[in-house]
Image: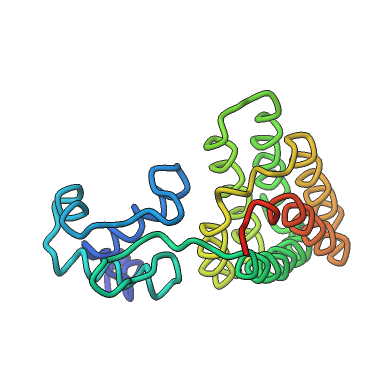
Length: 219
């Protein structure tokens, strides 16, 4: 088997439905789509140049991940969380991000790990004077991706973005300096190799975010 075949074995090209689902998620992060917004199949078909069957398959994928809800005779809309649902997602995010930080601390002495983490944090810290919320979100996502790359647990990356996409409109509720300080504490603990401290720093930051964000959700 050729080297190229070996690298691509088991991988398949994304379908039209996959591309639609990914772009809707990206649109939520970027503010193009908002909670409660209706997603009309004809509009999506025109926007992405897809058949109705591909649009429906993409919406089914998003519904399976809890990102949209499918309403009888009304089509789909971006899921709007209740306060209780948001509380549950923050609780799950706290555990998962804590685990990601713990595992990153356990692997921080592997080749290049320290440099990668430091660079990811510095990109966040550089946003201290910026009002570009989307730039901060991009750097924050890359930071989380770096944690997963360091610890090698791709299962965490399958879960984390799907949790965060629901909370994106509230993720900047924490004051800017507190956000950066929170990531600094996580980074310092991971760089020290202290697994317990890394997990607690990450969980503490998620709890801080939840305390600031949850009042924005209705019952």
